[in-house]
Length: 114
Length: 420
Image 1 (cartoon, rainbow over the protein chains, first blue to last red):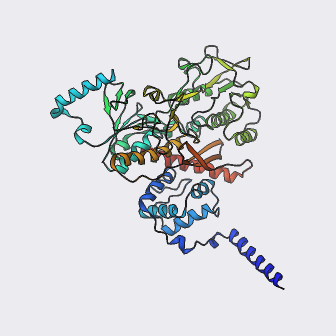
Image 2 (cartoon, chains in turn yellow, orange):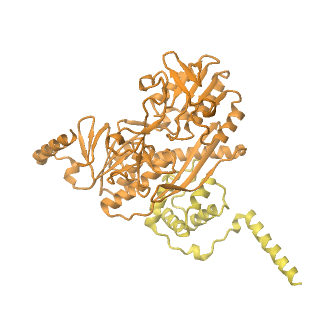
Image 3 (spheres, each protein chain N blue to C red):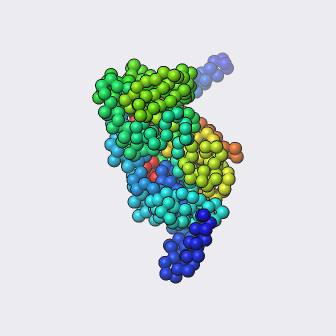
């Protein structure tokens, strides 16, 4: 009986995981990550690498403009790339090299550019 | 010689200071001189000027008034871009960022006196010097070829008139003619560059001269994105390209530019156009500065400063830094680390740990783009690779098209990042 209950929980967990894989809106970041205060100066330095491709004039030919977007949107996007919920290989690699503080710093900096 | 000239200039300047003191002397600000206005130098000049907000005087020394990017020059050969679309001027660096742009050649560096001598006769003082001169060719690297032969057998590895010349020679090949490329040994500028070029030339010939042949003599047994290029060549240009690697004598090459013949592994072939890409070394100003070890200038991975002289930073192709490929993207990435370190040293601004990245896109045929990239960190020994990726063979047409479109975005982005 106990083992059947465990098995049921196991299946349920797998089900949630598969569901999350298929539907990226299920990607939820914990508040501990969302509440990190981004360091603007560090974000400005890190952003120089992004600006090789993401243009300051926000044109989106082949590569989207990201200047002036909402902090939470940028934090989510970078964590989704880092966790491979989004597919672009360049962005998976770039985000993969960033820790939570660096992502917060970048999002804060880009959101500050209007 | 340079010390005498400097002494003279100093004396002359002191005598005439009240009448015509140069701006840099009058301002008393720290001075940065950047030699070379490509992906490394233009980026460094722009970032130092932009981020120091006028606290540092930045002078950029670059002989060309119009800069043609080496990246995307293959797409010009393939007919995907016109030459004007890869041409850039330094006007914005001067007008928007206050960079003092000097169109001249740097011909000597006095490290003790911290001066750069210009071919036009002037001398520039510096507190920090950035050398980003790109590449020069190793003398005698390909038997029978030297710079005197570059009009008959262009290298087209510094973009501009050489690229135009190669394109014209390809266009005037007779029906069923032969084009040969002599590929370079490692390390060299833009590892996938020769093979993207072969793809672009094949694309062009397939339309205008479909029975033409392409021979590539290569001193290497393998090359960047080899599987992706060979897949693309088989898919798009079946039977047109004969790549001869080192295992089949591809490194045993001599050329005769007068007779237009190429000898590979003892077998002589008459060719109608020939692209010789010789072995490379750091731009000659690095040798003149006395900061090279062999063909390249070794640098610290933490700030791109020369291991011989910490007041000189070497960027891009000329530097020997570790794992990063010699690419425009790498030079641009390195320039930002150096700019931050230089500002920190001269104005006390905050310095963060170095991070580097690179991605190289290549076009194989219409809407068939591939890419390779990596991230890097600074160690005491070298710039060390952290993570990377490469396009896969067999990708869908949609993925390849998106990759090509991404490369167009990157081109627009990096050139805006370089030239403002």
